[in-house]
Amino acid sequence: MRVTRFEVQFPFPVEFTREEQRALHDFFGAMCKRLQDQRPGEVVWLSGMGSAPIWKNGDIAGFDDEAYSFHITSREAYPGERE
Image (cartoon, rainbow, N blue to C red; front, side):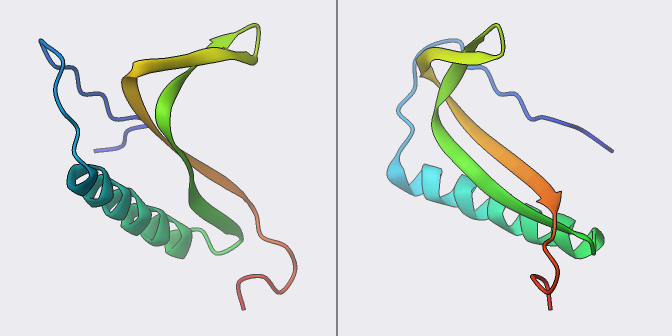
């Protein structure tokens, strides 16, 4: 299955523990490594996590503290960066 995002919604507010945050950070970090291994000319990394950004006209207008977000970024590798 190919996806561009994961979504989870709870029917009520839940406590998101440090251990759970770390487990998801590790999960997405491992996924970034696998994706980078599959894309030899790119660097892929977990570039942000925390309260979900609220976008307005292409700019961040604030943050939604009721939504926790993980953001993954990729770019072309600089010469010699992946050697």
